[in-house]
Image (cartoon, rainbow, N blue to C red; front, side, top):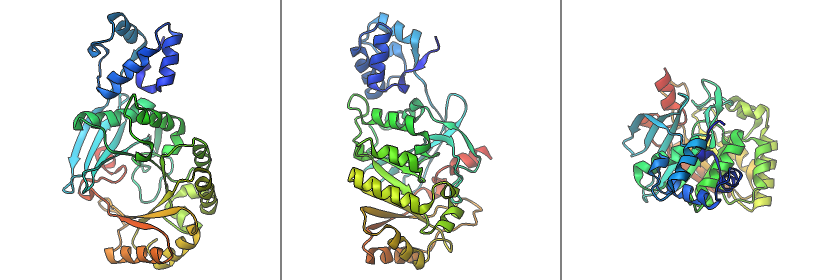
Length: 343
């Protein structure tokens, strides 16, 4: 029998698996403690487990690992890790430090991306595969080992489209949220999507309190299709209707991410159109300063233009914040460090 990665199982799944293999169900809770609370990477080091049970684990399961390829740290303290998976694939995870001492980890969900947004490096070399549950969790375990504590917030906003890897992302969130594992509150976990409409509909049935961010980046179909080819499959106005239904069903606020790119989507006319598009619902806007790669033809607007765009939305009663991109000196935007590494 092919060995299974123990970190691909939720607690309930592992209890069922142990029971099917003739083991006691409570052993699953013990194992979760060693793997997620203690960060133990070898069954032999789980000292309070019977030797016979450890042998059983060796015979049926294994513990995957992740390897650090490169580490860079920004002058603003942002940290970026280039990580190699067991099959040689490369992903990224980023740590962002707030002025209040909160640490947010931005994690990847895929190797590459299918959607090839104009402003994002993640899809420039195409899509390879989904990450497994264990490969998602190993990013958090890697950081936990380094910091000796969990990050305060988890954001699925690294390489890949999380809702395109729906089942594995949802299972990973179950484990991140589990009190027997990481015990990270649902409201501290954010899924960021380019707008996969069927998956948003599916997510609203989960009745979770996870945060949902939707990458909008334009307030009309033609421009959004230029910036985000996914809009050809899931058009803007259909996406907005689905988001309205999500808010009604879950009573949760949605954040619309809007990267401001100089001369393309930053005019105040687009701010007016955005306000008309999303006004009247429990939405807010997070304006993001574009983080260009070396040699990029796309540039970030001046801060005065960004502030004017924000003020125009606020006048229209759209809650709006500005997120200044961090880590620009270390290629911290999605996929940038990987692209430099693979050149």
